[in-house]
Amino acid sequence: MNGSNSNLTKMTLEEMKVARNHGESKTDWALLIKNQQAGIEPEEDDESPDATELMREVVNKLRVGRPSGGNKEQIALRIDRDILNSFRATGKGWQTLMNKALREWLQTHHI
Image 1 (cartoon, rainbow, N blue to C red):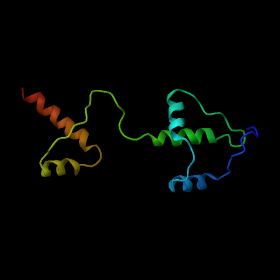
Image 2: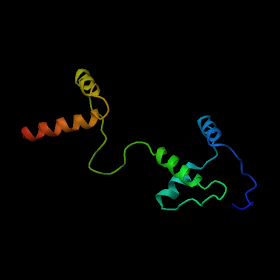
Image 3: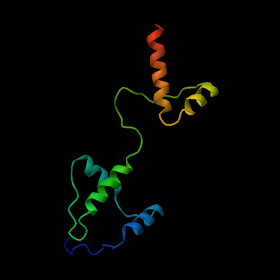
Image 4: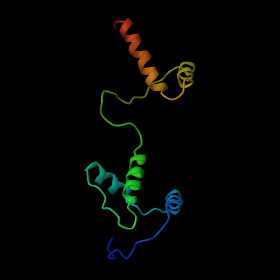
């Protein structure tokens, strides 16, 4: 890296994690995500060659929620508590399981 950036702060990875967890990160995550989606790669850092890969991993982990699009639609639905609890008790993926059960019901009942 060139010496033109006078506001650089040197921190260990652990110090960066602590700062981020305390809301002290000055990283523009929105810009990093936007650049990644546009296919713009961060410049290699001569002083820390693995930093680019670490940043890429962090940005990938920041993606939350389900991808938009597809044939799914988010709705509000009232379900009897015992039925809902039974599906939730199956663990991770219970919503997919509920969707599958509804699909199977539709295949045997013509409405």
